[in-house]
Image 1: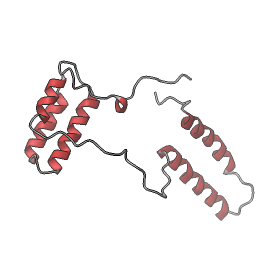
Image 2: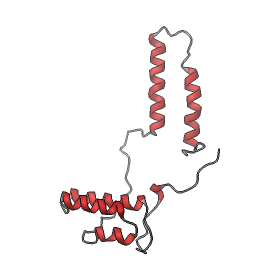
Image 3: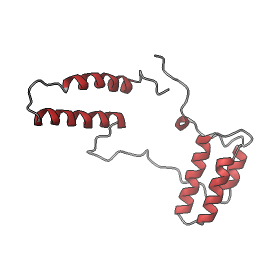
Image 4: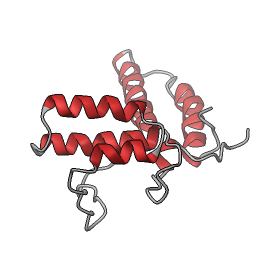
Length: 141
């Protein structure tokens, strides 16, 4: 299988330098997130937020999006990248699902008599797929 090297929407960054360029869902979502922050801070009423959000979803160019946030303060730049809480292990959802199902299978094996260790076979088969996903060898498309 080949890897899909096209940029994902989360990798796209808005280009505010030329407002004549067309925008995509990533840029629209970024502006809607900013509007939600301003609504949460009390700068926008619910009606204003809903109206601007609807306009953001129908925006075609950067200028259409710039109008929506022109009268609002720009977001404060983050000082540090977000850190994970100490002591917590963060796993991909696929890995968490795999581990939960494997724990359940081993529990069933233990409760039903613990003879032949049959959970090793689904563990091995599914584990190969999970390992391939983690290495990036499996394309989501």
